Length: 325
Length: 297
Image (cartoon, rainbow over all chains, first blue to last red; front, side, top):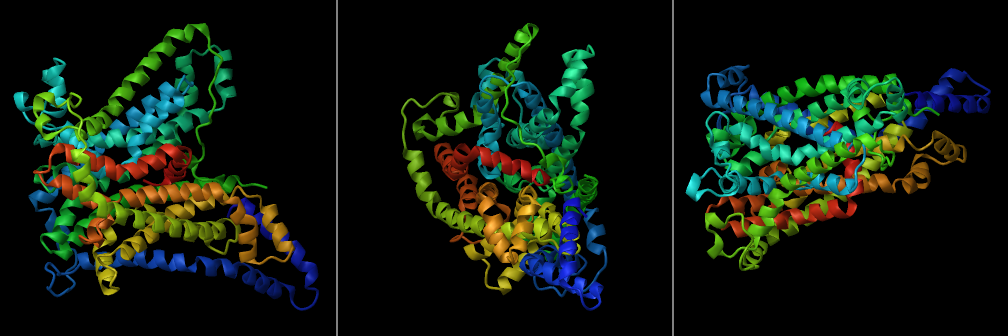
């Protein structure tokens, strides 16, 4: 329980006691307290019900569907245990889509973290026009993944030399032809290219997080290290960076869970091509094209598990450190 | 009063202070210039997509040749913009209806929730709050199939109201979080004073908390507006041709290979314009929303 809460209840108790001289004070006090907090619960009730039904209820419903035999829209929903869950792993397409999501996640998370960190480091000490720089790095955040996908599809057009457009054409023009490649249509590394637009979109966010972190380090601490003879590099290495661990973790979690759910960007870049298939797109196709609810629900449950593994420990950790103050 | 324990998680804590440090040791002049150059270099890279969007959108069909891909248009034409606007207009209007109504409802709900969870707490309020937070991170695919069935039963499928409902419900966690974190900064003495004066919960909320909430409302309105405007996943599952918001329509325009690039790019700019405007005009609040949302994606 937060301390602030303790303080208020303490105050109330003191004020309630003299007002109730007669009768067993304990019970009366409790009734009084219930009468006090009950309206809050009532005000929150619609949201509790909504979250209960739409988040937890529907997750339960979805899992039940995933455990059923409803593999067509009209099939009966008999309980079949984990059959759908195990079958998925014998499918080449599923394995591919998981591999794609993992490669995308590694490149996207590492790329956005490094770039965002670097930008924050460059901005940390203040520079002329800082507001402008920050605005430029952050503006992609305001755009939808669909719009991002449309531009980057043009930029990462894989057409060869003389028909090349986008970045390939630019590389040829600048004499950097060796950099031209087939981008997301590459059979092995396509998903790494697919992560580039996502890095472009999210790096500014990571920069904002890190910049806040850098500046949360008290200047006295840095100054003290300088007085002790530390070079600027050492100040960063031994004073500033250790302070960034919680922010790095938060950024990691945020980027990671965005990445595991990636959907819009893939749809806008390549549609439903197998070469860039990920679980979210696969699930979408199972619902709309294949009309296989059980399979769609199974994929969705796997996605939930992947995110939960990441999020639940993080939530527990944050709530705990919040209590510790 | 201690609000330490009720402050947001580490990542949500600091906002970049608006300070620049004038003190500069002479040795760091060169480093400074290097930093500036590097930052400028990144600005160029970050703006490339914007250049492509704008330059391409004004090109006539005759300039669609790959060899001219990176040049500015020789003849500037609005043709791409006109056709894009005509194709996108119904979607834009749907998005306006969706994002405006949805963000207002979200903000009101979030404000009440945040008030209760920070200033009018009940037993196990923290547990309820944590349960809310989990709803912020779930992949919405994990509720999508039952949600479609539920919406179909409620006759809410394929229309804007159903989409608003979904966004409002799944927006409860983030809106509650932002308001709760903001309200913990209101001194408890103020709440106590109102209570001593005999004000009940609603009076306290309306007379003490609400008048102090403008910044939090700005943050939540902007946050919800941009996420509803930019959403694609809910829209693609819950709407039909008539109620498609701008993102789905945009994806459809761009998805057909016969649509010229000028028109695709113009449509992408048009669909992004409202959120970009919000960002340019209210960027300060947008930043704050991002920080509060550090516990979100």
